[in-house]
Image (cartoon, rainbow, N blue to C red; front, top):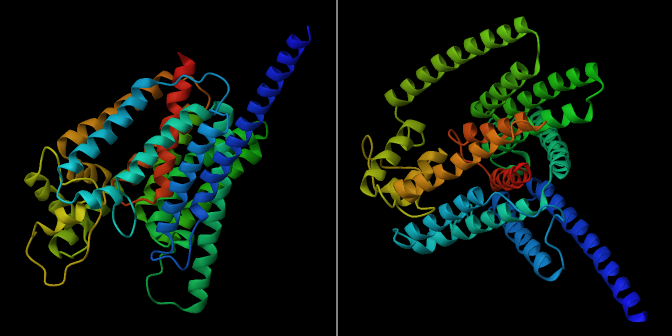
Length: 420
């Protein structure tokens, strides 16, 4: 009798401690993801991006230690997750490791560029993040994460505006694009553009029963983000937010006349953007500059022809870039370590083999999204992944933005398995 009582007490104590550990684990996860964009270290060799990568690597290591030694494995309910989606992520990572072993600079593939630390070590940590997210996130926790990310993004947009005012007031005449705690304006723009759909979801969720306030906030926040993106000077960021907000409005409104108006305005904006882009590309082709996108893309394409199947190895775009002279050799060339397009980056570094495995991730991701389209926040998830896909084809992104995509993949793997 006494032994049975002691066993019950022990079992209850163990369950309560596990609940506390799971709760603590979730709070650590939430803090790390939300705080990462604000990390910088003025005394680091690269003050903004490198400290973020250091923080991320340490953060994932801490999460793994907590799961191993802290008597916790994330979410206590429904621990299964979509194996095909997670498997495709690890298949891509395995292919990246394989082609890098046969690549032109294996040590650099392992650690990555000096300025970014974007090597295989970081990529494997991102894969671990997918697994952790799939164990931890639920629809309710995703809403909490979206709220934290939305607040952080609004603070970043506010900081960008304050920095812009300071630039104007001081009469600074150099590069006036603001990067705030990202340093690089395009890094900040990418983060704001990718988090923007989550901001829309947060407003919809938090102010569901206050229609006038909700509509005012949606319009005001969109204008606020577009202003911040204008301050960064990122046309890609502004275009991404505009596309996402147009789709959001088109799906959200019920009046057919309003839908037609949104569709008409969107078509006009697409035509104007197309004409502007064609003129810009034509100008850059006519007046070739060392850092111009047409030159970077052409050199990436020609270098891919030299290693079409296995690529040059992960994080070896710089080797591919210097191997090609297009349209002619330049005496004083720029250092290019990124293809400035995610698809071009995958093709150059991992070849057709890596690109096919990466494409498989998106196929399983889209398949899972279509299965959960009945979920209340399915639209924001679709726009979230769409914004990442759009922006990364025009610019390089920070590790702070990359982790959002991997967290999202882990979450999709989780809720798709719940739906099944």
